Structures are given as C-alpha cells and as structure tokens.
Length: 105
Image (cartoon, rainbow, N blue to C red; front, side, top):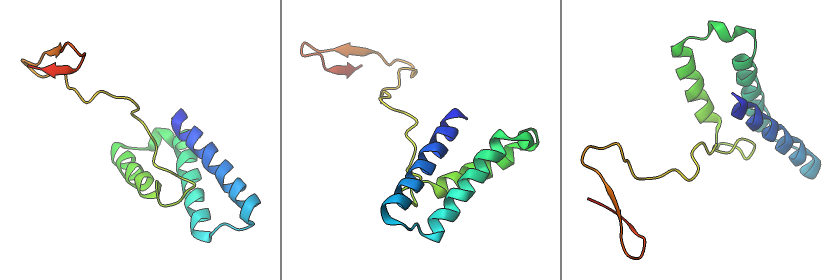
C-alpha cells in the first residue's frame, strides 16, 4: 500500500507542477487523478474491511486502465533487475563459462 501512496504523492506533484508551468490541465486528466485519489483513499480508509476479492480484482483492472493514460500516472515499476532465469525447474542447473557467461544444462 505504501507504493500506492507514493504514486499518488508523485501524481499530485506532477499535477501542480503542470499547472504552474502551463496554467491548465485537461478535465480528463483531472478526473483520472481524482479517481486515483478515491481508489487510494478507499484502500486506506475505514472501508478496507468490506472489500472482497472480487472488488480487489475490479480495482486492479481500474488502476491498470488509469496507468499510462496520462503523464500524471505512469506505469509503475514493480520488478526492477529481476532475473529472467527460473531456477525452480526440475533438472535445471547453471554453469559459468570461462568468460563468465551463464549457461544452463
């Protein structure tokens, strides 16, 4: 949830920075920011205990609909520098070559 609060904080900063620079922000972007604020408040407020699994699925769909549609809400980066290799597979082992390249067998 802290990531969501940080994203909201950055979005509000971008909003007011854009207002200070251009003096105007479109009504659509403003509404998207308000929806994002409402979702964040709903997930942090007293009604959290009433949200079901189906509600979380709908909220997730709504958030990914909002992400990337405006510069205020860019796509979040959840996984940074994650390995592409899946070491949980059966019979999978890693080897390093002489020039330190990873090979699998």
